[in-house]
Structure formats: structure tokens, C-alpha cells
Length: 369
Image (tube, one colour):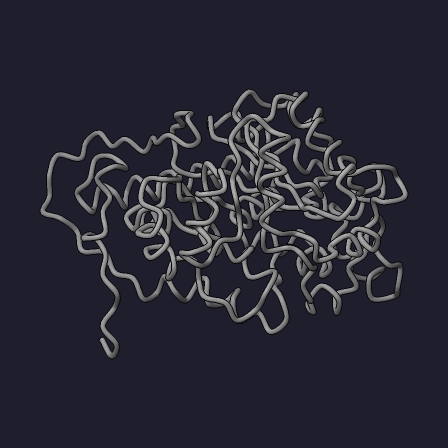
């Protein structure tokens, strides 16, 4: 799906989907870390019936993953969140949208009856955020996700070199020629509504350039307390890489944490999430649900995370590849692929349910072997 997505997208849109921060060490590390894990299957048993279901934030779901919030998905397909929400409904799994979604919370909620999560970027203008929270509540969203790793915007050199800009791409000779080579994407961009951010205030605050200025460095732990006062439902803290941060989030009232390095798109040269996951799981015990994202592309990756103690995995780029390639049908196909791969991995490991995935099914590869 990633190869098909690459063929569909011009350089700027592909840079947004595939790129990371600075030298993209973290981006590469997220994938390379899985190369160091090896499964140690148990003796064969009766695995004719395999249950991939789990419970996340109090709601049972048939698959142990969530379609993760990603800003500006209409950069890769003109239907954006609408197509993803419909695919989530078909699969019966949660879907999270970003503060920087290109579709209103009301319109997304109209597309699905599965749990919806709203990911918050916090800025100094708390009234704007308060208004976004209230709209998410009225639209029936289930959970709020507080990002703690986006207090300032990262330096994404691949996007800059590709000339990324919103609400309309820069019209230069290279971008014009690139658009001509990708007529499907270009036609829908030109004939659809402007790509804006309808959940964060008035129109003059919705271009990418202005939004970048809103990452003003004001996020702190007191914001979690403030959010708990604004929201009665589950609260998820996303961007945790240290055990002590996970413990602090649990003590401050979080219902779940997401072990995340933002898919390598924020601070470069941080560890892969699969590497720090076991220590965080051990630190928090059963005080909060531990979720994880960043770098997951295969059902076997998901199985490894569950074996190391994660309750579920959030999938960002993985579902956007499908969106870019074929809209809703592409997202549904990606979900089916991952579900099948997970089932096969579980069967080959000799386990029949997610609860049977345990650390003794994995080992770190011995150097030199």
C-alpha cells in the first residue's frame, strides 16, 4: 500500500506523510528496532479459533488497534477523516482525530458509531481549546488525548524542501509539473474545499503557517488537571517515553498513556517506542492502560507490542497509506491486512487470545547472529 500511495501523491504530500524530523534518525529507528526482536513460539496447540479482541478505555473492540489521530489527512486524500471514520465503523474499532483535523468533529461523528477520540494540541489561548473540547463533547466523542510532546513544532526538513504549504500548495514550476504527473490528487485538491482546520477557531487561524505559531511552549503537567476539569470521559496522555512520566500521568488522573515519539516527527534522536515500552509497563503496573504507537507496519509488530504489555497499538502512517492509495476502501484493506497478519502471528506462536501474548514469546536478537 505504501508503494501505491507513493505513486498517487506529489512530492509535498508524500513528504508530509512519510517524512520525519531533522535527519530522521528516530523515523528509521522506529522500524529498525523490530529487527532486533525475535519470536519464540510455544509448542503447537489448538489455534483453530483465535480471538483478537480486547478492551480499551472500557469498551470492547474486535481488534487490538486504533486508527490514530493524524493532522491534515486531506493532504493525502480529498475525503480525509470522513473516509477513515467510515473504515473504522466497518471494522468496529476506535478512530482518533487531531485538533488539526481537516473535517469538523460534527461531520466525523456523523460517519461512525464506534468510539471517537479527540487529540488535543494545547496553546496559550485556552478559550480556543475549551471551545474545541466542548464541540467534541457535544458531538459524542469518547476520549480526549493530550499530547505532551508537541509544545513546540519540530523542524521537518523534508517537508520544507518539498515546498509544503496549506491551504493551497505553492504554485512553482516544479510543483506545477509534479501536480501534472499526479492528476487524480491535483484534480481533487483543486475542486474540493480549501484544506483548513475547522475545529480550532476562526478562519484566519486555520492556515498551516499560522497554526505553526500556536505551538508556543506552554504545555505543562497542570494542563492535565485543567483538562480533567473540562472533560468527564477518559483522558489519554500521549508522548510518554520515560517510566517516571508514565507514573506521573497515572497519578495526575490519566486513564491511559500512549508510549509515543510522534512517529519520528517531533524530536529526533529519541529511542524507538518498542524499546522503552517494557520499562514503562513495569513502572505503571495496572494503574493505567498502556498504549503504544510509532513505526508499526505489520500485524507481527502489533503482536510484539501486546506481548510486551501494551493494551493496544495506535496506527498512523499505516492507515494513511491505505487512505492515500484508495480512500475508504484502502483504509479498510489495510485494516484487513493487519488483522490477518496478527491472527497468523498469534496462531504460529501458539496463542489463541490477546491475553495469552506474553514477554516469554519474545527475545532480543543476539548480536552477530
